[in-house]
Amino acid sequence: MPLLVVGSVAFDDVETPSASRERVLGGSAVYFSYAASYFTTVRLVGVVGDDWPEEHTNLLQSRGIDTAGLEVIAGEKTFHWKGKYLPNMNDRETLELHLNVFGDFDPVLPEEYRRCPYLFLANGSPSLQLKVLDQMTGPRLTVADTMDLWINVERDALMQLLRRIDGLVLNDAEAKLLTGDENLVSAGRKVREMGPRFVVIKKGEHGAMFFSEHETYVLPAYPTETVVDPTGAGDSFAGAMMGYLAEKNNFDPVTLKEAMAYGILVASFNVEDFSLDRMKKIDRADIDQRMTAYRQMLSF
Amino acid sequence: MPLLVVGSVAFDDVETPSASRERVLGGSAVYFSYAASYFTTVRLVGVVGDDWPEEHTNLLQSRGIDTAGLEVIAGEKTFHWKGKYLPNMNDRETLELHLNVFGDFDPVLPEEYRRCPYLFLANGSPSLQLKVLDQMTGPRLTVADTMDLWINVERDALMQLLRRIDGLVLNDAEAKLLTGDENLVSAGRKVREMGPRFVVIKKGEHGAMFFSEHETYVLPAYPTETVVDPTGAGDSFAGAMMGYLAEKNNFDPVTLKEAMAYGILVASFNVEDFSLDRMKKIDRADIDQRMTAYRQMLSF
Image 1: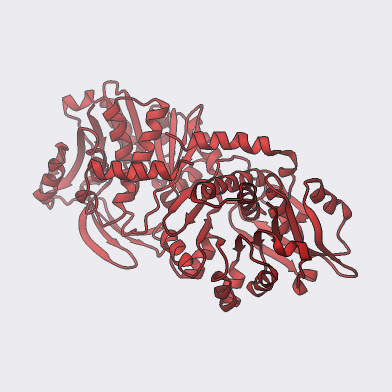
Image 2: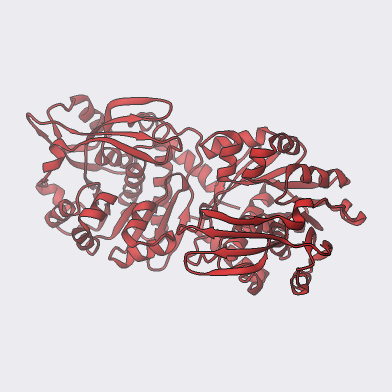
């Protein structure tokens, strides 16, 4: 089934302790789409300036991603993020943030997009996410991401959003910030009580936790020695997870757990190089091969 | 098969954000022994002062732990640790540390203890651990713990120890400190290259990683909402792990992974109350019940 994602499309400058890259392809909707494209048809809604090179669009299209919803604003610049990772490769500082066209992003969904059965609201303000949701005609499954900024400055809109979505994906620090609870198990349960039927807490190198009414579980990250650039790990996790659910057109507990595992594995590939460079080199068979190893790792 | 542990026996003062306890039963060898006692016969070697109450010895004996190696020094005081947990319940500060009798601990193993097939060298200086090892007549499996203090002040003795043991158990911060590597996967491999055939990195609320020549894997912690006191989690992990290996008298890859899982589960009980209070209330059936849930959590 088709999967719609609305989110940021960006140029990233990334510094790590051992290497750095400038103006590489990034953004939540880009990482999400690329990861989801291993599993299903993706429709991307985003905005860029006219500094956006055609080759990036071509790359996304080469994976079957529908970019008809990628708006190009003449005379404007694309969202630009510059960040630096600390030696632990988990924590990072934002050095520069130029929202540019993303600052006024007010997407109008093409008619056929509005009936998309699977929807992911990637990084963006809760009020923007709500505007997108308002245009949809009853998606089967709506999942959103959020971040510390919106928890701090748009809590009311976020709480409103939480009552209207099926699932929320956020990281450990955000779950603690949102609930004021330092224990991730109780924090996850508290987020779920705010509205979503399920909550996924991403723990970076420590994997991810899942919370629904009847289930609480944690799956570890796939242990990889090669961590070159963690940028987009959370978005590629969400992309693979949602892509798999859309592929199966099912989100029962068993499928959700498999989807979590796919999310973890695609994210484990993503961090092995800058931008989409590692994902560009793999296909579904590579992911499934890692899945076999992952299942073996967890069976005893 | 019998399992010998040599380590600290202590009184702990523990402060957490919500409660505190004074002079409760603690120490690495105590937590280890109690956890191991669900699986096998344990022989404890340690030292206390004459401030040590008989009831503590009785408690250990009630679990079948052989306390013949627990030396009581007249006119002296028992090792005393006072610590405080930060709100995240993972990080802690040591507020007071009185080694007392443990400072001069120089154990002479009873003759029958020297032939013990399973040996765990719990918290203590590497030179002390080496002295114990010198008294043994060829244990089948020797595993040691270490800590930041010894990595900093007795690195040479520690490196010597690492070449003589089968397994090392240490936490994530210690693995990073020992290797200078921030990536736990490569840190674990580097520790293994220092000598031990296998290495276990404990990650607290994030579970534990295992490294041998042919295997690298990670198992998540059992998600528990009730974290009252993390003191002794690492030692009860090691106790259950070693206890299970000794029970099976086997340490092939399959048994080692099951042992890791038992370690994780007994530790998950241990943190649910102060001192041994939670472990006192459970039996093997409770552990196996949690094991069933844990296996289910990890299967998909």
